[in-house]
Image (cartoon, rainbow, N blue to C red; front, side, top):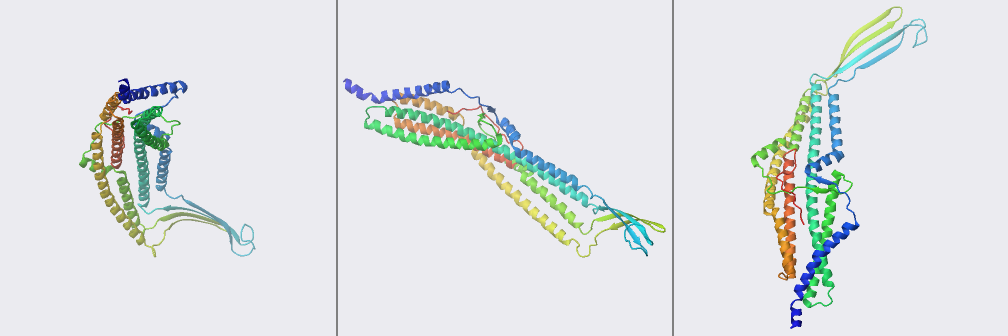
Length: 450
């Protein structure tokens, strides 16, 4: 009878001892690690705004863009000024007969001569103002490029931060699974006698452990890649602890109002409109190309001989439009203007298609966010605790336990993936619309995933 009872209870006893290992070993390992290795101070980052402020301070691209704006402003100031006046001085000797010297004084029949000329070039009326307007539009383009750079950096930092945060949480979850299965493997390998059922379970645990270790290595590599990309903008000496908020229901956008706002504020369309305005000014410049610029000169000359002679005069110089009347400039400017108008129409139509596509993508992201809400993480934790308890008491078989463990992991990954997809679609939509603030809204309390 005693022998029969020992044969009836081995599996439940194994599971109870296995649970003791699963609970006690991580706690003892944690105490050993805490005693041997003192924790190093880790900087903490609370919220997206702190990340963006750090990126704005550390990314040198913003300084470079600001210098390009200053360069364009300097060219604008120069474009509104006239050419410098030209001063010409001439002097020499006038030979009237006798003597051998050509230059200098002295000798019969010679005298000295001197001449000064001041010349100032003037643009044809209206040309200088148009040149200044063109340079001013270049300043607008430089400022627009600087603003667009800031928006792109903000969007990339936000996406990378949430992708890194999600990868970090998934990595922690997989790491805990690996620890549990390693303890299970160690216990199963330490048993002196294995029944065919126990041997099969040991093989299953070992195979699952190998798969989990590979998955953990891949998640660690992904986490490292995401951090390296994010730290390009943040430049932290050591990895900080990110405290970002997850999202509950997300934000929807009114389609008609959003499309109208995007057509007005999209940075690429703004750039195209500025280029169109530049082409219009260039056409106006081409129309007055046939009317050349001119220069006015003031002349003074003096000759000292037997009698002193002085001369005062004014002069004007201008090219005669005899062979080149500037018709090709007008044709080129007209062609560029029509080309820019056609390109603007195409980009407006393309933006509408992109906005429609992105709005639908955002709706799908919202549906996924609501299909896998944050509350499911608490449900997964509760079910996992109940599963461990049932496995310990022998009411759940090993294969069922492993299947449920895998389903719990897929649920955690689906919830975090829904968060990342919502952030990506939200930032892309605001980026297309030209919004200055790209921070995701509708936040919930920070949710730690285990």
